[in-house]
Amino acid sequence: MATAIRRNSQVGEAEWAARQELAACYRVFDMLGWSEMIYNHITVKVPGEEDAFLINPFGLHFSEVTASNLVKIDIDGNKLDDNPYPVNMAGFVQHSVFHRHLPDAHCIMHTHTTAGMAVSSVEGGLRPANFYACNFAGQIAYHDFEGVTVRSEEGERLIQSLGDKRVMLLKNHGILVMGKTLPEAFIKHWALQRACEIQIATASMGNMLEVSPAVVAVHQRDLYMAQASAKPGQADFDAMVRKVDRIDPNWRD
Image (cartoon, rainbow, N blue to C red; front, side):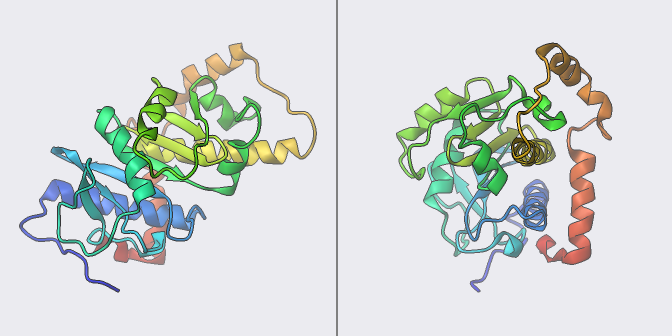
């Protein structure tokens, strides 16, 4: 395996903390079964450097990602460190356009989970027929499939499709979520994944019982009262990191 950068005077405290949080997230995704060989991406902006973000090294499985082997690139795709690993073009094209145009998109997550791809591939997408799906009613954008995302001209259409939403189902493709923090994006992805899994299970049993718009509105209004922390997703993410640490803590390196 190629060498990776190590923490040194050129990697400040804020960047190192972001690297560790992102590396932990990759391990959490793997633990939850959301890996897809060496593909898919989670990215975060580098604190204090609005035009720079961290992405997984292309060629490594999520279970191999560590704080030091994450690749630092700018929004034009240029490496900003001496990391020997390449970057997947599909990940760069999709994530860079959102990091470039959306100041609040600190963290972006894209996966090809079975449930996410299945629900994104049916007419109507996610329906408000279970607890978690009600979290997202009226808050999901959809983008038509245009093939593998390696062409920069698709970026403008991705931004148009997203609009003012921060959760999107890429039709025939999978899940895309973003958040002001990594834990916030994580809890969105987790809840959306659960909503998709439950919809698939429910659809196999017959007609789904959809929740009325009035009840959905009450549900979304009151969701904050079910949070364990004032910071969305923080307690949930921390709990998953503790589980990862019991399996293998080398993501911290």
